Image (tube, rainbow, N blue to C red; front, side, top):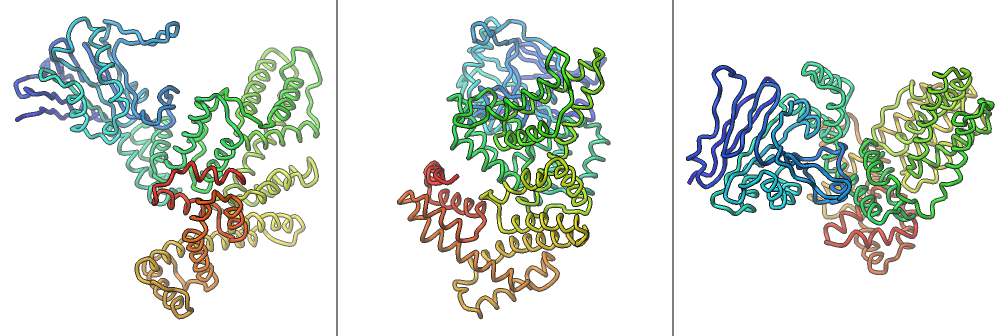
Length: 614
């Protein structure tokens, strides 16, 4: 009749807990007590096991361990990361990994104390579970108990979706069903950091709204973190985990991860895989996905993997030669750097960024360390000046590249006169180093990018021509700002129209070919969007017509061309449509994905079709 007994309480003003005993005769077991001399401590016990919740942390003795959902971006064993189905971290008391034998060792020494700070730092920042088991099958020497627990429950606990969803009842059911022992009793303890949870939920509410947080709203998060004393590291890992769990982000990041996992298993990355990774990184900029999500995966899964057929050796070799000649040589040599060296380093940085090759950044880090050591040991200050000269240009490169990529691939990007003035100053610095260097580094390649959409192309084109006109005193920064803001506004309105027009056509209009139908649709839509305060004026006619044309092209592609492309595996037909339709490649790829999902098709077939042109 009774399945479990639960106790709910607070260890302190930051940590909430649930203590549960579950089994066939749970109601017959008195499993906790308190010490009148220490009211801040509560002791839970079962035969051979003890778990104490105190004000500063927990103490444990006996069998069992802890588990929690992995937070994205935390240190995660590659063995777990490479298994798509593994989502949880599992720790069994008294175990350690023997590197010599490559096996897990079990000990009888399972007792210990863990502070709450360490629990929520090493494990999940929001919630963590601890457990212990009793029963016929969980007796004998402690190391035998632990080995059996891992063998019986390890796979299930590391893969259970109930953990991340905090479905305590389902966790209990899964464990007891697997144990399948009428005498077994489970003791489950759930610890929740209520301050971290409040911060996480506040950030999620703001971020999930439109994947962008205004400065004023972000300031409210900063105030909340300061009030609760949440350090920067915990804030960052909570935010990254929330951003990863946004459905739009997770799909892209998981696809990136799956490609890297496949590459990790075979120890190399080929041209097609590298192209797919590049596409996803570009798509992430468009979708406002933080680069930290990808950098973490690169570090864990791409490290030491051979890049097959990628001509990386030349630029890496040149970079190493320059840096070693300046900083890393033991001999005293001239430490200055000339314009030719700086140009080589800038183009090497550009190529490394395109290939996501972290060897370049690692060489810079090594150079920085050696530079500091030489200065400390009394070397000439000119060494530091030379390195600072490089870093100054690299900082300019990063700032410029970031700004232009945002303009090119993001909607609703924040554009300001300060940004334009910064780009203007950086352009002057690069062009002083070599004529038209700014264009060669940042503009030539971006105009060749197949994922550059119509509005992104407009923004970058206006920026390029506008900066030149400002240099010639024929345009002001304010005027250029107005042009860019107008294009960005048109882009946002076009996307809004596309969403609402498609919805209207789907639900109310079977035909929209005639001008009368379109005029009626435009009138109704204008009233709806004004009422929803999404616009404050009549829809511009050219944007409405552009939206209708996009929907017609989409219908032609989905209903006529795409089935033929799939049947014939016709990459040329697909590429011909993409080049001549004028549709955003990101948009078309999302249509393709929806089509494959809707029809239960294998996405690998789509990747092979794209292979010839990506």
